[in-house]
Length: 501
Image 1 (tube, rainbow, N blue to C red):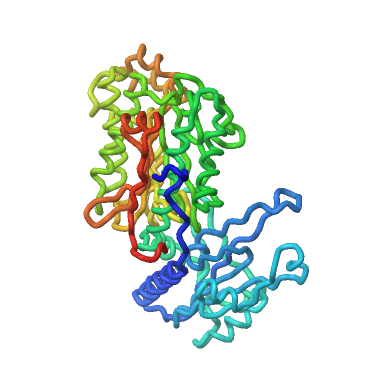
Image 2: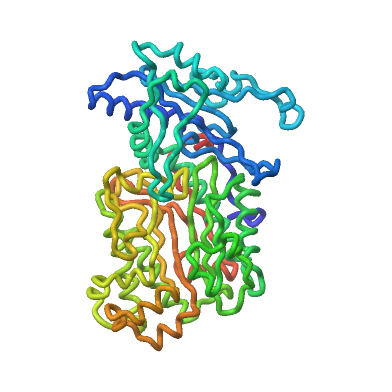
């Protein structure tokens, strides 16, 4: 990394071909499905983009970020758009809001439809008040025109996607069940252009994590670590959005899995002896990253910190070494649990047979969350559970965001952790099923520790996988970087080109 600048990276140009290819992928997948069902190849896919939101009842506009399915197909940054794909021809259309004249005074120049046709590389552009007339005019088949609307369950949020609405929709037939599973599955497998964006988000985020690691000092506030990360990814990476709210947990806060929310706002003072658990990822042109680093705030690991960190790192590395197409994600979660339990036994925190610990689901006491999740335009990208798939019910496994077998082109996080959470530990210490496994003296000594998590974003290849995150992971690497040693971000290329992705 050049000493003259904190960054060796620069924001890549965006090619709208990415979204054209996404539309083509959906077009072919949907037509194949309709053909297999002996249904006519007629109708329109219709999606409604996101709308700007104000802060509660005020006129303060929150920074807009496009709805993810709409972003996937059209790449549109602005609010208030609709988009369609003609199932018969593959032709794509955008419908833009007809803005009032005073928009030009307050918000900037009002662009004509031709501007958006060129910007987003679609076939045609019309206004949103023309949707009914345009679609009825362009529908070539007999009978009422058919609209394939997006409606389905997000298995992470348990919320249903709201289908598009517009004035005059009652003139059309609507299909609410076909599109969602097909479009969701399109998002699961990433193209080279998508992978290049995810890789860039990982590169700038990895670089920012290293900068934060280097500048962390006892006496700082957790929010200062968050601020440094956000500054680096925006200042040098062009990332205006973060993939999620930053988790900057130190000391016992690192046992709070989703720390950093409004009621726990990254505001503790860093103390000597604390471990830091920083879960932060930048987003670039909708595509995200999700990286967690854990390290001692003083820059040197104690014996206890080394024990816990090595347990988690060994689990992280074991999973990545085993990943390839066809491997079941539930098995990877169990592998991570086993490695951590074996390490805790070796470290004298646990006693007894590890197979029996596994059978009693003891791993869920120390790692209550799932091993990882699909990643892409959303941090928790959809598609983790296929229609009809059953979510495991056992402790720990019930938190898995996917139970699928790995496929080439998936991007999935690998994020094992080991935490000392009283809400789980204290009942377990009294449980007849698992209390025999604990060395109570050592467990009680570790209770104020907090936790360790190591998270990387991993792309499944035809023969294995590629770790897209590039942070120091080994103890000697972390200690060297925190002492001032250089840390190169080696370039991974999914596509050749003139600096474009």
